[in-house]
Image 1: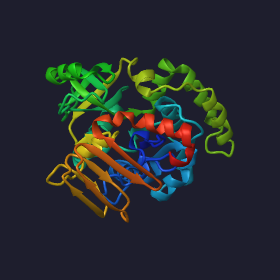
Image 2 (image 1 turned 30 degrees about the horizontal axis):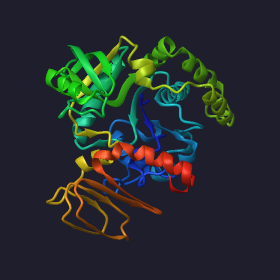
Image 3 (image 1 turned 120 degrees about the horizontal axis):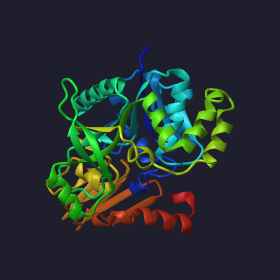
Length: 362
């Protein structure tokens, strides 16, 4: 039996990528980079190099189940775990872990977001194989840390402690601290110290290790999902989940488990990672013209425009003149024009529109 399992977290709504990402089709189901694959398809294809199709679980909101099955046709319906409401990453991981426990108590698990960019896939797979080797032999919670290339304020950071010996691996460290998104001054200190790495949000552990950690640090969440053993893979699972999620706290795996546990380790690497969380990060990772413009659309003409993003439907003719550092994004019935430096306001735009116009545009 292959003991490697992959849990893909695909429940977010990607509001920072509005209007391209909308509640009905969030960014993980979009070909944001124009590669011919959606982000979740890229994630699945990468992880197939270490995990067989039958050992994948995708945790998402119930409204996206058909989208997942449409975009990942290798999967069976029972491999799509449908959350009735969003409760952050700890309940999502507890649910998946207890379902895996019903099938294979000896599982080793990779947990990955569905919507990240990884440009050096061979390096990524190499690190996953090293990580799986480590967690299969040790009671450890492992995350992948990314060597920072700039004082980024949009990511969480991991501070390393001492190096840990693993045959053939020189980038494994004990975790000293987790730090939330810093201000620019602190991010520069982190970068200069050489002790801090970006937190990728990609985790590896054995089933036994993560369940023991839930028992120790999030006993209430663990207890809720442990009660589901007799309901998982039955017709009663949906009703059980509806009740369970209504009683479940909204808490992240980082805050609920990783920051409290003493057996946390990090593989420090560089495999061309970005969480693609914002239009700005998309611009950073896109091909650009000679004036620094990222253009996604078949009929775009730009004049006197630089360092901007223009992302429109392929059948739209769009002419842009005189913009410096702007986002121009169009999707269906919505057009947004926003300064790139002010993109943090997009969530506020979405909230305001939901209140004034209803759900039609969001």
